[in-house]
Length: 547
Image (cartoon, rainbow, N blue to C red; front, side, top):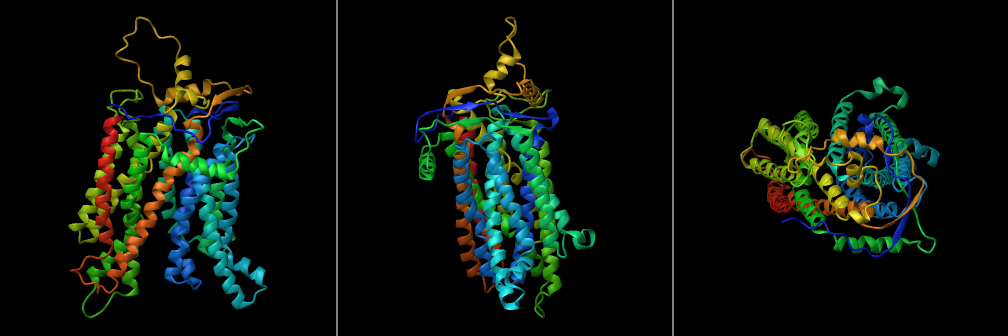
């Protein structure tokens, strides 16, 4: 039995003229890195913002509840920006393509916002003329505005980055492309950990006098250069819209709403899995340092004295170390696991040689079970070493979570409706044509495996340009941005729910005396996460059987 990859009913049914074909310039080995390098800067930006912005806001006099409210910008921007930008980009008729104009515009806003965050006091001083009280207030407000602008713009950029993968690569390369994307994210996390431990004002004084100033400049350089490389190297199709068809913003929003309730079964299952999985993941991503630090503080606490400032700093350092080990395993997972992975159980794509290929849905299913077991292990863990081991192992599951759902979602989008698929340089029908006629004497039961290298070779065989307008029916692949935005909404909503849940849990344990015999409040959020991850495992198991 196979799951339905049926076409998505559309708010409007019309044909669309397109010009050209998709293509990646440059040597074959650089195609996938070129397409995903922008995500490296995106991840480093997230790491810098989450590490340095909260203490910076506190140093400006903002309260902890105020900081928490400011950082609702992250999930709020993901909830709003990714579906809207996806819909707008899907229908863009720019001569530069559908995605790249939004990518470059988002990068420009992101760069200016990040520099504003690093140099808020200097900008506030210029605006207020140096008056102390007004400068202080202006600094706080500018910092808050900068964080909101950074979050909204980087979510727009990230939405376009993911949609570009779907547009450019065929189903046979989606797993490899998304594995490269996940590797860039993992490498970005490690780079963020590394540069965060350097005395940057000593090494790079010409970029600023504080670490945040220098990091803001470095992040801007990385995110802009990375996306410029992608924009220059990638060629997109160009939509040619009829004069009588000019959709308004209201039409785009209606399209998002209709699409949300008419998703094909497989895409709907992926979104459901992500919803429950993120109910478990979000506490781990946000509160791991607090969990490890609290274990350490409880271990050194005595009846005679409470924890010292040095104890708290050491606990934070141990929490960061656990996250570093987790990030290392995440990167290794994304580098090694795709070698033995096939897209789906029915996919013909395998690696050359005798290495067995494991279906990607099965790997994703097992990652939920692994994460569930890690969260249940908190019942038995009471030492720093044990907690560090548990958090490190979650890095394997997190590596799969950054890769598998996006690859499966992209494959579902691209294989849903062959007839309404937009032209790409590697459509399966074109690949078959390029391979030539099948030998009549060949044995049909043992087809030759198709490798990633073969697909990339065929990418280079595609004509460099094609200016003929082709009239195509708009189908599911033309709505990649909208669908990825809806998928992101299913990731963001759990973040709001978990934030509220954790606030209640922490309030209940606010008067905890920190004794060794009482578990810290964070583990309750982790243990509830085990329940939700098991639900995700069950849904994923059903989907894996159907594919």
